[in-house]
Amino acid sequence: MTDTAKRYGESFYGLALEENVDEQILKELQTIQSIFSGEKDYLRLLSSPKIGKKEKNRLLTEAFEGRVHLYTLNFLRILSDEGRLSEFSGCVEAFRAAYNREHGILEVKVISAVALDDEKRNRLLERLREMTGKTIDLKERVNPAIIGGIRLEMDGKRYDGSVQRRLENLREDILAARE
Image: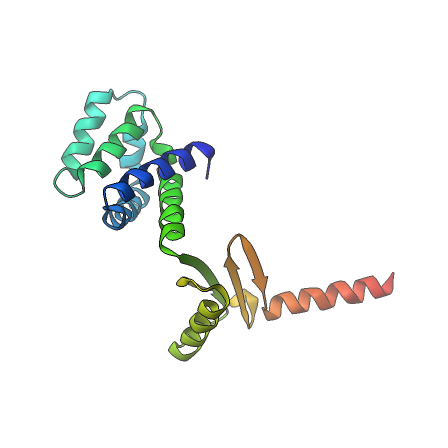
């Protein structure tokens, strides 16, 4: 995330919080982010310098008016007018981070070799809640390459308890012993 995206996202969050529409707008931003991810041509069109500001605003209005909060639509228009729609994903990330801080939510990414069953997921969630005192937003991903165990990413740190990492450590120890 760039400094620009952070500044825009956090500023927009401040307004949304002040007006008590932060949860609604977060959902809208995430939905729009999904739309932009699936419709890259549309985002390229809105970012094209060959298209004037009025036309871009018309396209945004046509697509989103009445479907999102006026603040969300105006935020898109501002980004478009400033030639910063390419920063949209970073703005959403900054908005979400500010929302999570304000609401005591910690986003945790868990990567495992196989999908976690309900019992393991619930034990992990409970343990993380106890450790952090926060509500946990668990994002799960499966990566068979880690062989077993899990890898956690939270608060900008990585905790690696995977079999893959243990094997890498063992290999490094063996190579160091040879020298």
